[in-house]
Image (spheres, rainbow, N blue to C red):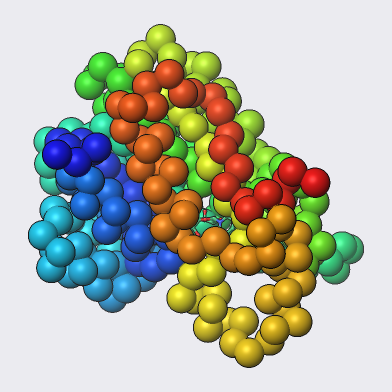
Length: 254
Ligand SMILES: NC(=O)c1ccc[n+]([C@@H]2O[C@H](COP(=O)([O-])OP(=O)(O)OC[C@H]3O[C@@H](n4cnc5c(N)ncnc54)[C@H](O)[C@@H]3O)[C@@H](O)[C@H]2O)c1
């Protein structure tokens, strides 16, 4: 028996990082997973990995979720895949970083689109289906950057967008409660994904600058974020809504 047996879950950004690990863990817990990403090859690899492990997953890619029409299409295809939708796991995001005042208007707009528009669009189009089904769960991946300022790298749009995700989650929880919809945010600290590990390379100074902000003085593994999401998506978390869970190695505790 898995904790997510029979649940149909739409996970965004399943081509890599936390989204790939989420696909594997949610499938392990018995969910039927629909995953989508702008990167088709990487998303197909995730589907293969899940199926090879005995899990159930359908992939939709390439899809650009900053486009509302494509976000709507993903939701419709997800529902068609397994005949409904119980959980929306808004994981996909894309951000630019840079200092004030050089941070460009284009980078500001791309970051707010990549981090704030995506979870809004997907939630908006999934909402009527969750209502019709009698309820469901929306999990929004925000960031500790939505709770505290961050020095490395400079992150004006990233912090604003993720504070927006946390605020939006509270509002979705309020408006969803009467429909049986729970909405919860997770705010990770620094997570070491294959992509970020590759980007940081042997730059130990950059790694130290990032992990110094945490109490545990290390990056999270993607599993450490996703296991919290799997709990929040399950019926064991039935009294939790409107909350924001910091999973940040203690970064926001000091
Ligand atoms: N990695 C970290 O340190 C960290 C820290 C705090 C919060 N987060 C958040 O965790 C979530 C997952 O991040 P990750 O670390 O796995 O990053 P990642 O870049 O490895 O994964 C994000 C995925 O989203 C996809 N994506 C991006 N833009 C898209 C679009 N327009 N349409 C469809 N798919 C798109 C990417 O292709 C990628 O596969 C994000 O919401 C991110 O903001 C990450």
